[in-house]
Length: 234
Image (cartoon, rainbow, N blue to C red):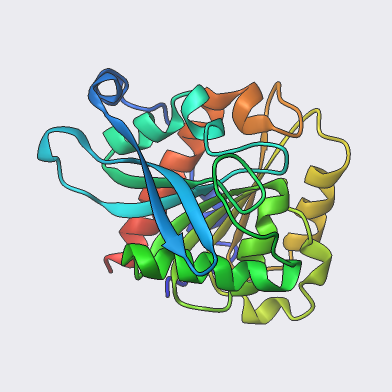
């Protein structure tokens, strides 16, 4: 578990350092593969991208799409390729009820256990998470556990359900677009009380800020991941 003192580096860190040009070029060499695995009653379709040319893998990152989207969200703007080029093992499933994943609908209560089961089948023991909007239902209940190195929550839903904020030690970066007038600002207001939180507004973007301004989104995530990895190594 990573712990970053509040009112310290997590809040002060500059998160807008640009992605290196060599990483942008390397992203064109990344191969995004399509795979399928069985997780309980579900045949889960997912996309995967690894650092090219046997480059060192820094960590695993799972990308969870929002409602009415699918894992293609993370390939349409090239985010999987970008983060693989930066050294991350990227995994993006089609969540139950979306895309090419087959199987029954699951309740809100069962979503966290589904995510844990998916990661277990893949053999992933610790992971960074990027979760968009309604996909936060899979993630927020698990913030008290050690499986998440850190979380990027993009205008996450269900933030009103956090009633004991001191228990949620996982570092979390909360993002929302400056044109988002509903869920994003609400999430920021609800999550600002967490002990390891950073709030960041993406300019020139709406609710789906990772699509509207994907370059700014990728830069902020890269710098946040670097910051957390530096703490994790101490």
